[in-house]
Image (tube, rainbow, N blue to C red; front, top):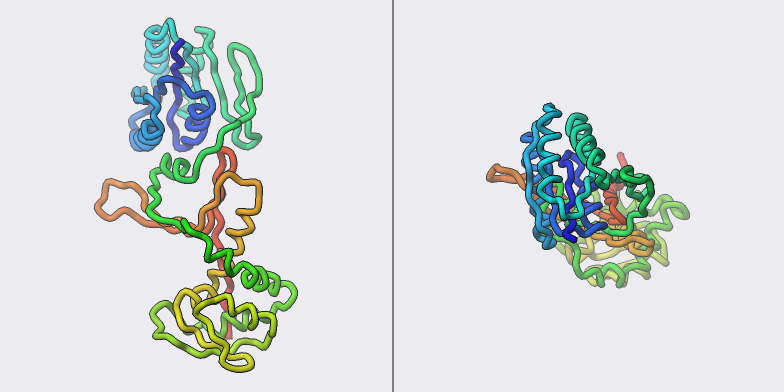
Length: 299
């Protein structure tokens, strides 16, 4: 029996994507208002790329008779199908109208509880269904209209210098003067600075020994180093913190972790706005964004 799953499109598309991925219907019908045209387009595009048969139907946002009529028509056309409804989202009129039509017809109605990671079936019987799917970072962003252009794909260099990264993180508590001193020494340098440069760091034998893990660093004197490439400069100026958070997240029970996610928002304009996210974590049907910042010491 063919399974047709109906969703109410709203500003929060993740519950819709969740039930589709969990139940794997043959066809997905997205009920949208005119105000949700763009949101429906993003969601439909993601579903089609995942090989789901998906299309949209327009309903009137505040005309309950229109919503009931369209819902009943969908049910009537699919008498020999398994038809279900995701009621998470939409206007109150849309929710009431679809609920009435599907409830009266004895069809399955679901509500997604993302907080407790479960799907609630509220008709024709009540039960809880654990969410067992995981939404990828790319899909999560895509349903909101964000297209990933780049991210760190080969992280071998990060783990090559992990001992230095862990040491720097530990100094925040054990030797709180170290990071402010490094930030102060490098405050006036950036990616446009001609290299090499020589800077003086606080004397810390363990730190100076571990700096050998950076190919672009040479120890000059007791506590002076020569920085020969911008990768090492950026690392010492704060990228180490992003890498520390990234490695910590990778060690957790997560589904996916990405570092330095760069991309753009899909818009009708010629110059779509761009964004970069430091660390992104996908776990189940939830996405976590972490922005890594250091405070520059003031004189």
